[in-house]
Image (cartoon, rainbow, N blue to C red; front, side):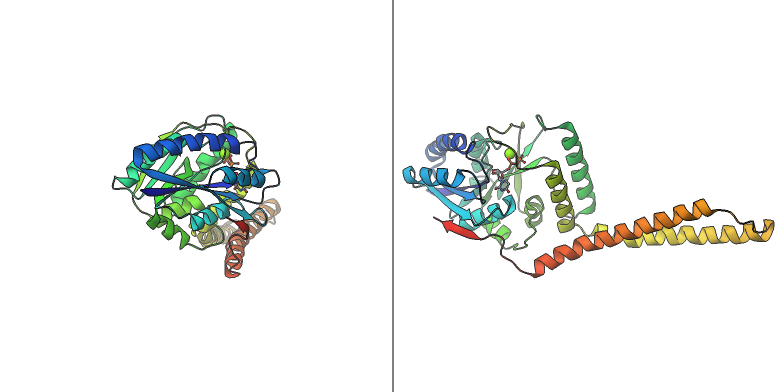
Length: 311
Ligand code: UDP
Ligand code: MG
Protein backbone atom coordinates (compact mmCIF):
# COMPACT_ATOMS: atom_id res chain seq x y z
CA UNK A 1 0.00 0.00 0.00
CA UNK A 2 1.42 3.35 -1.02
CA UNK A 3 0.29 6.71 0.27
CA UNK A 4 -0.38 9.78 -1.86
CA UNK A 5 -0.46 13.16 -0.12
CA UNK A 6 -2.69 15.76 -1.72
CA UNK A 7 -1.52 19.25 -0.79
CA UNK A 8 -4.06 22.04 -1.28
CA UNK A 9 -3.18 25.66 -0.52
CA UNK A 10 -6.40 27.51 0.30
CA UNK A 11 -6.98 31.21 0.67
CA UNK A 12 -10.60 32.28 1.07
CA UNK A 13 -11.90 29.15 -0.61
CA UNK A 14 -15.06 28.46 1.40
CA UNK A 15 -17.11 28.56 -1.81
CA UNK A 16 -14.94 26.21 -3.86
CA UNK A 17 -13.71 23.80 -1.21
CA UNK A 18 -16.90 21.72 -0.83
CA UNK A 19 -16.92 21.05 -4.59
CA UNK A 20 -13.26 20.16 -4.51
CA UNK A 21 -13.68 17.79 -1.60
CA UNK A 22 -16.57 15.95 -3.22
CA UNK A 23 -14.66 15.38 -6.45
CA UNK A 24 -11.36 14.44 -4.85
CA UNK A 25 -12.98 11.93 -2.48
CA UNK A 26 -14.50 10.17 -5.45
CA UNK A 27 -11.15 10.03 -7.23
CA UNK A 28 -9.49 8.86 -4.01
CA UNK A 29 -11.68 5.78 -3.85
CA UNK A 30 -10.78 4.97 -7.49
CA UNK A 31 -7.10 5.31 -6.67
CA UNK A 32 -7.51 2.91 -3.78
CA UNK A 33 -9.12 0.30 -6.02
CA UNK A 34 -7.06 0.77 -9.14
CA UNK A 35 -3.65 1.66 -7.76
CA UNK A 36 -3.81 0.31 -4.22
CA UNK A 37 -2.96 3.82 -3.12
CA UNK A 38 -4.29 5.53 -0.04
CA UNK A 39 -4.77 9.29 -0.05
CA UNK A 40 -4.14 11.79 2.72
CA UNK A 41 -5.16 15.43 2.42
CA UNK A 42 -3.20 18.43 3.58
CA UNK A 43 -5.21 21.61 3.38
CA UNK A 44 -3.08 24.68 3.98
CA UNK A 45 -5.19 27.54 5.23
CA UNK A 46 -3.20 30.56 4.14
CA UNK A 47 -4.66 33.04 6.63
CA UNK A 48 -8.14 32.96 5.09
CA UNK A 49 -10.55 35.65 6.23
CA UNK A 50 -13.68 33.63 5.47
CA UNK A 51 -14.90 30.30 6.80
CA UNK A 52 -12.26 28.16 5.09
CA UNK A 53 -10.60 26.96 8.28
CA UNK A 54 -13.90 26.13 9.95
CA UNK A 55 -14.85 24.16 6.86
CA UNK A 56 -11.60 22.20 6.89
CA UNK A 57 -12.05 21.39 10.58
CA UNK A 58 -15.54 20.18 9.84
CA UNK A 59 -14.22 17.90 7.08
CA UNK A 60 -11.62 16.57 9.48
CA UNK A 61 -14.27 15.51 11.98
CA UNK A 62 -15.87 13.14 9.50
CA UNK A 63 -12.75 12.09 7.59
CA UNK A 64 -9.51 11.20 9.33
CA UNK A 65 -7.55 11.44 6.08
CA UNK A 66 -7.94 15.20 6.32
CA UNK A 67 -5.13 17.22 7.91
CA UNK A 68 -4.42 20.89 7.91
CA UNK A 69 -1.91 23.61 8.65
CA UNK A 70 -3.26 27.06 9.40
CA UNK A 71 -1.04 30.11 8.97
CA UNK A 72 -0.94 33.09 11.30
CA UNK A 73 -1.63 35.37 8.31
CA UNK A 74 -1.64 35.27 4.52
CA UNK A 75 1.82 34.21 3.37
CA UNK A 76 1.00 33.50 -0.28
CA UNK A 77 0.56 30.33 -2.26
CA UNK A 78 4.27 29.59 -2.48
CA UNK A 79 4.53 29.45 1.30
CA UNK A 80 1.46 27.23 1.35
CA UNK A 81 3.11 24.82 -1.06
CA UNK A 82 6.24 24.69 1.09
CA UNK A 83 4.27 24.04 4.28
CA UNK A 84 2.30 21.29 2.54
CA UNK A 85 5.38 19.56 1.18
CA UNK A 86 6.92 19.70 4.63
CA UNK A 87 3.87 18.23 6.33
CA UNK A 88 3.07 15.54 3.75
CA UNK A 89 4.05 12.02 4.74
CA UNK A 90 3.10 10.11 1.61
CA UNK A 91 5.40 8.24 -0.74
CA UNK A 92 4.08 10.56 -3.42
CA UNK A 93 2.89 14.12 -3.13
CA UNK A 94 0.65 16.08 -5.47
CA UNK A 95 -0.04 19.83 -5.40
CA UNK A 96 -3.55 20.96 -6.29
CA UNK A 97 -5.57 24.17 -6.32
CA UNK A 98 -8.78 24.26 -4.35
CA UNK A 99 -10.84 25.66 -7.23
CA UNK A 100 -10.94 22.50 -9.39
CA UNK A 101 -8.85 24.13 -12.12
CA UNK A 102 -6.62 21.09 -11.69
CA UNK A 103 -8.84 18.17 -12.75
CA UNK A 104 -8.57 15.42 -10.10
CA UNK A 105 -9.34 12.83 -12.79
CA UNK A 106 -5.78 13.25 -14.10
CA UNK A 107 -4.36 11.85 -10.86
CA UNK A 108 -4.69 8.29 -12.07
CA UNK A 109 -2.53 8.92 -15.16
CA UNK A 110 -0.06 10.93 -13.14
CA UNK A 111 0.31 8.17 -10.62
CA UNK A 112 0.75 5.64 -13.43
CA UNK A 113 3.65 7.61 -14.90
CA UNK A 114 5.50 7.97 -11.64
CA UNK A 115 4.71 4.74 -9.86
CA UNK A 116 5.41 2.22 -12.59
CA UNK A 117 7.05 4.38 -15.22
CA UNK A 118 10.56 5.78 -15.31
CA UNK A 119 9.43 9.26 -14.22
CA UNK A 120 10.06 11.12 -10.97
CA UNK A 121 7.45 13.78 -11.63
CA UNK A 122 4.20 14.08 -13.49
CA UNK A 123 3.50 17.70 -14.34
CA UNK A 124 0.58 19.28 -16.14
CA UNK A 125 0.26 21.98 -18.72
CA UNK A 126 -2.75 23.86 -20.02
CA UNK A 127 -2.87 23.73 -23.79
CA UNK A 128 -4.99 26.87 -23.99
CA UNK A 129 -5.93 29.82 -21.86
CA UNK A 130 -9.63 29.75 -22.60
CA UNK A 131 -11.68 32.01 -20.34
CA UNK A 132 -8.76 34.27 -19.54
CA UNK A 133 -8.64 37.94 -20.57
CA UNK A 134 -6.68 38.09 -23.90
CA UNK A 135 -4.40 40.83 -22.63
CA UNK A 136 -3.36 38.65 -19.71
CA UNK A 137 -2.62 35.70 -22.00
CA UNK A 138 -0.55 37.99 -24.21
CA UNK A 139 1.60 39.21 -21.33
CA UNK A 140 1.91 35.69 -19.94
CA UNK A 141 3.26 34.50 -23.32
CA UNK A 142 5.72 37.40 -23.45
CA UNK A 143 6.87 36.64 -19.94
CA UNK A 144 7.60 32.98 -20.67
CA UNK A 145 9.42 33.83 -23.86
CA UNK A 146 11.54 36.40 -22.05
CA UNK A 147 12.40 34.36 -18.98
CA UNK A 148 13.32 31.29 -21.01
CA UNK A 149 15.68 33.38 -23.06
CA UNK A 150 17.47 34.94 -20.08
CA UNK A 151 17.36 32.07 -17.59
CA UNK A 152 19.28 28.80 -17.59
CA UNK A 153 16.40 27.14 -15.81
CA UNK A 154 13.64 25.92 -18.07
CA UNK A 155 10.26 27.38 -17.19
CA UNK A 156 7.41 25.83 -19.15
CA UNK A 157 4.67 28.02 -20.62
CA UNK A 158 1.23 27.11 -19.37
CA UNK A 159 2.62 24.81 -16.71
CA UNK A 160 0.51 24.57 -13.60
CA UNK A 161 1.66 23.89 -10.09
CA UNK A 162 -0.48 20.74 -10.36
CA UNK A 163 2.28 18.16 -10.19
CA UNK A 164 2.84 14.76 -8.64
CA UNK A 165 6.28 14.00 -7.24
CA UNK A 166 8.20 11.25 -5.56
CA UNK A 167 9.55 11.70 -2.07
CA UNK A 168 13.00 12.29 -3.53
CA UNK A 169 11.81 15.29 -5.57
CA UNK A 170 9.90 16.67 -2.58
CA UNK A 171 13.03 16.53 -0.47
CA UNK A 172 14.99 18.31 -3.19
CA UNK A 173 12.42 21.10 -3.29
CA UNK A 174 12.37 21.38 0.50
CA UNK A 175 16.15 21.75 0.44
CA UNK A 176 15.66 25.01 -1.45
CA UNK A 177 14.90 27.22 1.49
CA UNK A 178 14.84 30.59 -0.24
CA UNK A 179 12.20 33.00 0.94
CA UNK A 180 11.40 34.39 -2.52
CA UNK A 181 9.87 31.26 -3.90
CA UNK A 182 9.04 31.07 -7.58
CA UNK A 183 7.74 27.51 -7.82
CA UNK A 184 7.81 27.19 -11.59
CA UNK A 185 11.51 27.98 -11.49
CA UNK A 186 12.18 25.75 -8.50
CA UNK A 187 10.55 22.76 -10.20
CA UNK A 188 12.70 23.31 -13.27
CA UNK A 189 15.83 23.89 -11.25
CA UNK A 190 15.70 20.64 -9.26
CA UNK A 191 15.52 18.72 -12.53
CA UNK A 192 14.46 15.03 -12.49
CA UNK A 193 12.61 13.19 -15.20
CA UNK A 194 9.26 14.79 -15.79
CA UNK A 195 6.29 13.48 -17.71
CA UNK A 196 4.10 16.25 -19.11
CA UNK A 197 0.36 15.75 -19.28
CA UNK A 198 -1.82 18.24 -21.10
CA UNK A 199 -5.35 19.35 -20.50
CA UNK A 200 -7.72 22.07 -21.61
CA UNK A 201 -8.12 25.04 -19.35
CA UNK A 202 -10.93 24.71 -16.84
CA UNK A 203 -12.51 27.73 -15.23
CA UNK A 204 -12.64 28.13 -11.45
CA UNK A 205 -15.70 26.37 -10.02
CA UNK A 206 -16.66 29.03 -7.46
CA UNK A 207 -15.17 31.99 -5.64
CA UNK A 208 -12.70 34.43 -7.16
CA UNK A 209 -9.14 34.36 -8.42
CA UNK A 210 -6.60 35.83 -5.99
CA UNK A 211 -4.46 37.23 -8.76
CA UNK A 212 -4.87 40.73 -10.09
CA UNK A 213 -2.92 41.85 -13.11
CA UNK A 214 -0.62 43.93 -10.93
CA UNK A 215 0.08 40.99 -8.58
CA UNK A 216 0.94 38.81 -11.59
CA UNK A 217 3.25 41.50 -12.90
CA UNK A 218 5.13 41.71 -9.58
CA UNK A 219 5.25 37.92 -9.43
CA UNK A 220 6.84 37.80 -12.88
CA UNK A 221 9.52 40.28 -11.81
CA UNK A 222 10.18 38.06 -8.81
CA UNK A 223 10.57 35.08 -11.11
CA UNK A 224 13.05 36.89 -13.30
CA UNK A 225 15.12 38.16 -10.37
CA UNK A 226 15.12 34.73 -8.75
CA UNK A 227 16.14 32.76 -11.83
CA UNK A 228 18.22 35.03 -14.01
CA UNK A 229 21.03 37.50 -13.50
CA UNK A 230 20.95 38.74 -17.08
CA UNK A 231 19.22 42.03 -16.14
CA UNK A 232 22.28 42.83 -14.04
CA UNK A 233 24.36 42.79 -17.20
CA UNK A 234 22.07 45.29 -18.92
CA UNK A 235 23.84 48.29 -17.36
CA UNK A 236 27.26 47.12 -18.51
CA UNK A 237 26.07 46.34 -22.03
CA UNK A 238 24.20 49.65 -22.32
CA UNK A 239 27.26 51.44 -20.96
CA UNK A 240 29.49 49.84 -23.60
CA UNK A 241 27.12 50.64 -26.44
CA UNK A 242 26.82 54.27 -25.43
CA UNK A 243 30.60 54.61 -25.01
CA UNK A 244 30.94 53.46 -28.61
CA UNK A 245 28.30 55.89 -29.84
CA UNK A 246 29.85 58.76 -27.86
CA UNK A 247 33.29 58.03 -29.35
CA UNK A 248 31.95 58.06 -32.91
CA UNK A 249 30.06 61.29 -32.21
CA UNK A 250 33.21 62.86 -30.82
CA UNK A 251 35.17 62.07 -33.98
CA UNK A 252 32.32 63.37 -36.12
CA UNK A 253 32.00 66.66 -34.20
CA UNK A 254 35.77 67.19 -34.15
CA UNK A 255 36.07 66.72 -37.92
CA UNK A 256 33.02 68.88 -38.59
CA UNK A 257 34.46 71.71 -36.47
CA UNK A 258 37.78 71.45 -38.34
CA UNK A 259 36.19 71.51 -41.78
CA UNK A 260 33.20 73.88 -41.36
CA UNK A 261 33.87 75.83 -38.17
CA UNK A 262 31.71 75.60 -35.04
CA UNK A 263 28.36 77.43 -35.09
CA UNK A 264 26.52 77.08 -31.75
CA UNK A 265 23.57 74.79 -32.22
CA UNK A 266 22.22 71.51 -31.00
CA UNK A 267 20.55 72.30 -27.69
CA UNK A 268 17.54 70.08 -28.38
CA UNK A 269 19.71 67.14 -29.30
CA UNK A 270 21.82 67.71 -26.19
CA UNK A 271 18.73 67.72 -24.01
CA UNK A 272 17.51 64.46 -25.55
CA UNK A 273 20.87 62.84 -24.93
CA UNK A 274 20.96 63.95 -21.31
CA UNK A 275 17.44 62.68 -20.70
CA UNK A 276 18.16 59.37 -22.41
CA UNK A 277 21.33 58.80 -20.43
CA UNK A 278 19.61 59.78 -17.19
CA UNK A 279 16.82 57.35 -17.91
CA UNK A 280 19.16 54.49 -18.66
CA UNK A 281 21.15 55.19 -15.52
CA UNK A 282 18.09 55.28 -13.29
CA UNK A 283 16.78 52.09 -14.90
CA UNK A 284 20.08 50.34 -14.26
CA UNK A 285 20.16 51.47 -10.65
CA UNK A 286 16.60 50.21 -10.32
CA UNK A 287 17.56 46.78 -11.66
CA UNK A 288 20.44 46.67 -9.22
CA UNK A 289 18.04 47.65 -6.46
CA UNK A 290 15.75 44.73 -7.29
CA UNK A 291 18.55 42.24 -6.79
CA UNK A 292 19.82 44.02 -3.71
CA UNK A 293 16.39 44.05 -2.08
CA UNK A 294 15.96 40.32 -2.71
CA UNK A 295 19.41 39.65 -1.31
CA UNK A 296 18.55 41.77 1.72
CA UNK A 297 15.37 39.81 2.38
CA UNK A 298 17.12 36.46 1.93
CA UNK A 299 19.91 37.34 4.36
CA UNK A 300 17.37 37.94 7.11
CA UNK A 301 16.58 34.24 7.01
CA UNK A 302 13.01 34.73 8.07
CA UNK A 303 10.81 31.63 8.15
CA UNK A 304 8.83 30.98 4.97
CA UNK A 305 5.58 30.75 6.94
CA UNK A 306 4.35 30.73 10.52
CA UNK A 307 1.88 28.02 11.45
CA UNK A 308 -0.72 28.76 14.06
CA UNK A 309 -2.34 25.36 14.05
CA UNK A 310 -1.38 22.00 12.62
CA UNK A 311 -3.22 18.76 12.85
N1 UDP B 1 -3.84 30.69 -2.82
C1 UDP B 1 -3.20 30.70 -1.58
N2 UDP B 1 -2.71 31.86 -1.08
C2 UDP B 1 -2.81 33.05 -1.75
C3 UDP B 1 -3.42 33.03 -3.03
C4 UDP B 1 -3.91 31.84 -3.54
O1 UDP B 1 -3.08 29.64 -0.95
O2 UDP B 1 -2.35 34.07 -1.24
C5 UDP B 1 -4.38 29.43 -3.37
C6 UDP B 1 -5.85 29.50 -3.76
O3 UDP B 1 -6.67 29.25 -2.66
C7 UDP B 1 -5.96 28.41 -4.80
C8 UDP B 1 -4.59 28.45 -5.47
O4 UDP B 1 -3.71 29.13 -4.57
O5 UDP B 1 -6.15 27.13 -4.23
C9 UDP B 1 -4.63 29.17 -6.82
O6 UDP B 1 -5.19 30.45 -6.67
P1 UDP B 1 -6.17 31.08 -7.75
O7 UDP B 1 -7.14 30.05 -8.21
O8 UDP B 1 -6.72 32.33 -7.17
O9 UDP B 1 -5.14 31.44 -8.91
P2 UDP B 1 -5.37 31.27 -10.48
O10 UDP B 1 -5.89 29.88 -10.71
O11 UDP B 1 -6.36 32.31 -10.87
O12 UDP B 1 -4.02 31.48 -11.06
MG1 MG C 1 -7.46 29.09 -9.89
